[in-house]
Image (cartoon, rainbow, N blue to C red; front, side, top):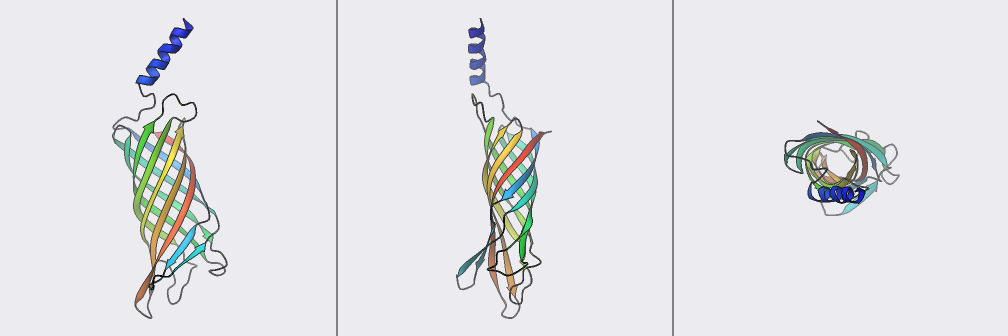
Length: 200
């Protein structure tokens, strides 16, 4: 009898997705991230490139998703990357960070018969980044301007606990009054996020 019950439960588990995210479902994800050595890249007008590493730092963010079809969520989100010191190659007391507001897409894949992971998902984000770099000076310009933000990543979920690996880029520029030009800068980050998903 016990063997028959086990066989029936396995059969149901293989046919019915136990953790399906249905169309119309809503969720809020809250995340704390660890940023591994951010990189500020300088792209000069003559095509030369220079990179300036910053100290590792943390981020804090939240996303809201609405599932337009089963297992495909569209959402909005915000994250804040706390400022960290640039290394000595830039100069003393120079810091960089960012706050990003974005639209997000989240395809979710259900995992059946897996004891360790309920779901795996991918993330794509596109939005606007507000650079936090008031202490950076460069020539006649005193700060990085704001610009586009994008990110891609993947995550896993177990019992509403989420772990993500993300790669993100902020675009910005320095304007130079004395010759009327500008340089494009990119602020690149690799983040490990840990958080919790609240179902609404």
